[in-house]
Amino acid sequence: MRLVRYGDAAADHGIGIEDDHGVAPTRFETIVELVLSGESPEPVGEPVNPTRILAPVERPGKILGSGVNFRSHLDENPSGVLPEQPGFFSKLPSSVIGPGDPIVIPAPERQVDYEVELAIVIGRAARAVPAARALEHVLGYTIVHDVSARDLQFAGDMVLGKGLDTFCPIGPAIVTVDELGDASGLELATYVNGERMQRGNTSQWLFGVARLVEFLSAYVTLEPGDVVTTGTPAGVGTFRRPPVYLQPGDEVTVEVEGIGRLTNPVVAGW
Image (cartoon, rainbow, N blue to C red; front, side, top):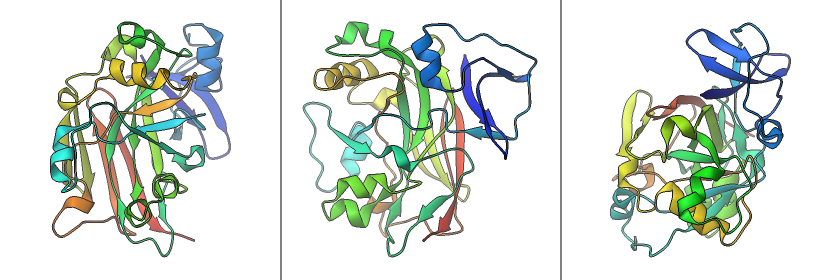
């Protein structure tokens, strides 16, 4: 099942079930409301053709990013060290935007990078969950574009480097776990102005979905609507020679097989 949050220019309209016929409305306004209900979403009207598809999780309580989870990304980093266990950083809830919304580069930041990531959306609260039961706590999967301000990040400020406003596009849909299982074997890629910059496959993960949920839930409670990313493959701009950074006027598309494509323009900011 594909779940989207849809709306128009005037207001958000809620959660819908997307298929080839359009988007069928449900009675739920948010993903969190849906998962807390314990119900399976059912259509409550005829399919609609919304003018906007929004970030499927508007303000996640937690956005936890997997730092290094692709061997190819480790290999392209001159200072990379093979991790013995997963490692994470946080992105701020206020950084979330949806499909088509602009990524805003604030002055004087000039080293803004792209990173495609498949993301887990938590459906049931998870605390000290063993790997064998981890998928019971996953609602489904979406795409996160982990936009990164490398100037700030490499100066030691990971919070701002990852959490600036507009630096977390999410979407276009959540595909439920009954369709994608453990999300292994999915192709993912990034395109900047139509040129492919990243390509990978989730079969190359160092740590799979079950291990990530197991590890995190040993330390923090994962709550419904929380988002956990699963790392990015090689090809990021900062490790290219010469480096390639996003510029105002660019258009970036990140895609994951089975979920779709998430496209955002890049603009100069405040």
